[in-house]
Image 1 (cartoon, rainbow, N blue to C red):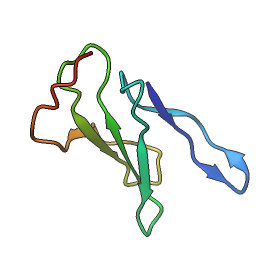
Image 2: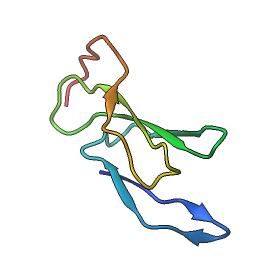
Image 3: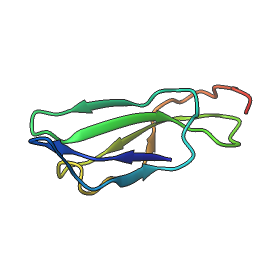
Length: 80
């Protein structure tokens, strides 16, 4: 599982679970827009044969998150 916490002025905010069963060997990526809204990319893990690449967005600074959206079209064919 993947959690997000915002750090402001040295204080760590609440952990928010943003994805389940992410790839155990692929590091997630994170970026911020000009307003400080995070976007995270992860690779699907668990028992999935496909291991889709997903993007997860927040539009309120990381308080709430949209459902993960697949961004790769082809099958990765990575064995579990």
